[in-house]
Length: 162
Image 1 (spheres, rainbow, N blue to C red):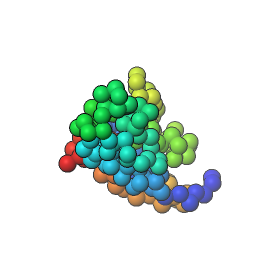
Image 2: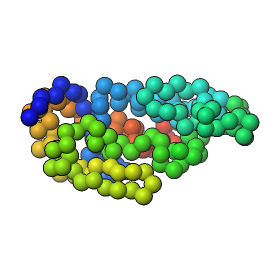
Image 3: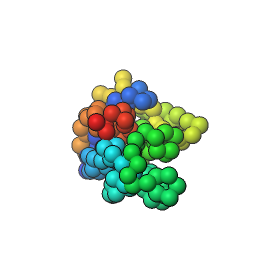
Image 4: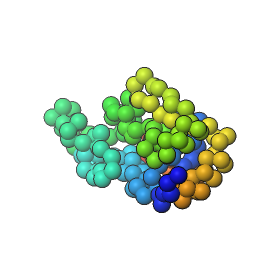
């Protein structure tokens, strides 16, 4: 058994009604990027949102001003194709595949396949205590933050604009 020195944030992901885990080192900054895009009032503002951890689905590579997305045109993040299709931000429940040890994924989770969005790891809330205890035994720092987890998954994205 290897010892980790990683800080994870986790919480109840309401979209899939299960636990989700993310790297705490970048989670807050990623959530800030999601909120910044959601807060943009025009397409020009949306295009200017700088993304360090995520890609900008309203960026000039995806929505050219000459195609009806003028800088002064009102912006609604929920109307962006990648957001409406569920491709941005990516499912927070898929992150467990990269942040949790494989043996714990196998023991506590079940791979779920979606038609359009890829796979995610369904970790029942009932296993929270045991899973968190095992992670801590292995040297992980684990913090629960339901609001942050759901922001990372794009939950209530339209309401972040207000």
